[in-house]
Amino acid sequence: MSGEKLTSQRQLRVGELVRHALSAFLSRDEILDPDLDGAFITVPEVRMTRDLKIAKVYIMPLGGQKVDVVVDALNRNQKFIRGQVVPTLKLKFAPEFRFFEDETFGEAGRIDQLLRSDHVAQDLRPDEDENDPEDQ
Image (cartoon, rainbow, N blue to C red; front, side):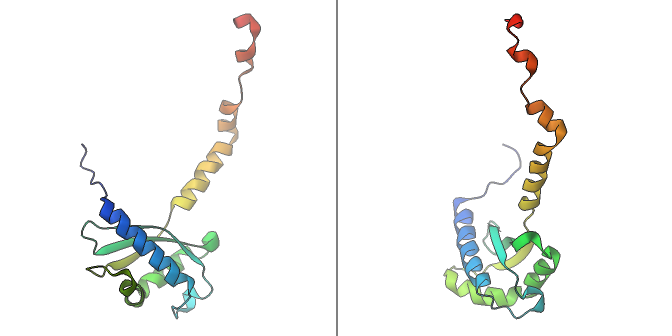
């Protein structure tokens, strides 16, 4: 086995619990910060550390607009967010939230663009020689 640490079921379960609670809180638009006014934020993933004390929250504003500004604003307001969300979680420890840009949207778009490129498309077209009866 490589030196890679596996994520436990408990980490996954708590991460999903935190993700749902954060999504519900962010949808209520209760943070008084001009950088977050009117920002619709999705929370595709939350990764918990092994000790469950830090939640790495991956976010993406709708349409990918002002990602850096939104991430900075959320990190600036993380103590307020933590105070509003943690009591609903009923966890032994109150995790600290750290917000990051979810880069999977951009990566999916990049892969889609590659698959649509002429170079890849030519490899996906059926080869005319494959159906030639003389080759059989």
